[in-house]
Length: 310
Image (cartoon, rainbow, N blue to C red; front, side, top):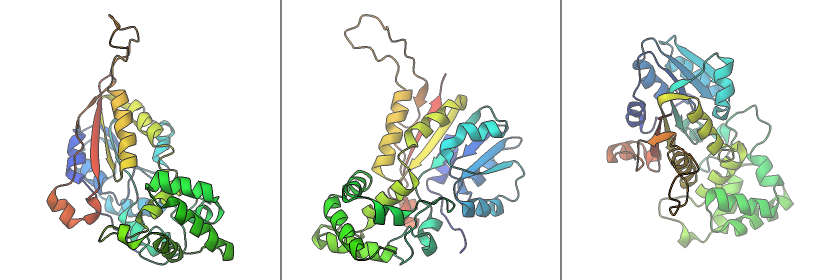
């Protein structure tokens, strides 16, 4: 299957980086290379580090970016940015972009088991070399742990009922496919509570995918690490797709941009905290109506940008 992915908020995110001709940049979620291509077009003597957990994405990006000879391809998790740069002899970055979440290719490829639309083996691994998959979560987690992740990561109000029905079904036989799981979820949720045009299993699949890939577990630390490796004046642009991601990014950005934390009644500052960053996007940038019409998957996306000042 061809690797197809439409990059969201493409112009906005690349423009926000203020690309320098000879700068060093990182795309922590390389995907099909959409953001990287636009960054590379603006680089003359610079360098780009393209990182992705998915080997299929690395292969697709190499084809897309074949005209450029200043790309370092890394098959790894972006959370390891400090080690990645060290291993490649790079000290600091002039900027970086992270396009979080799952790619269109992963969603549309039935074999990857990310989607409730196609019946496929329960998988959802962004890195196919990982041993832990959605099958393990669905068939091995306790009812309590299933309830927790569905509620916390999917914000699913029927999480307890769904978890109970999953456990009941797997006691008869292991739940093997996305179709089986989607049907269990559908039968667990009152039809009248499902938003028109939406699928009842959407939040459940999101929650399980996040758990399988540890997406929220390391996000805040990864954002701080990316900020740490920026040069002064360097920018970090992050695109999120659901409220949990956006909240985590917003909180880290706010903490990096906060100076004195002393109580207001203190006559002088004793904490000596100085702002390390300046938030460029006081309100997140969202897609235009045109983009949302052309790419429905962009509707929930938000772009936040921070600049390192010390």
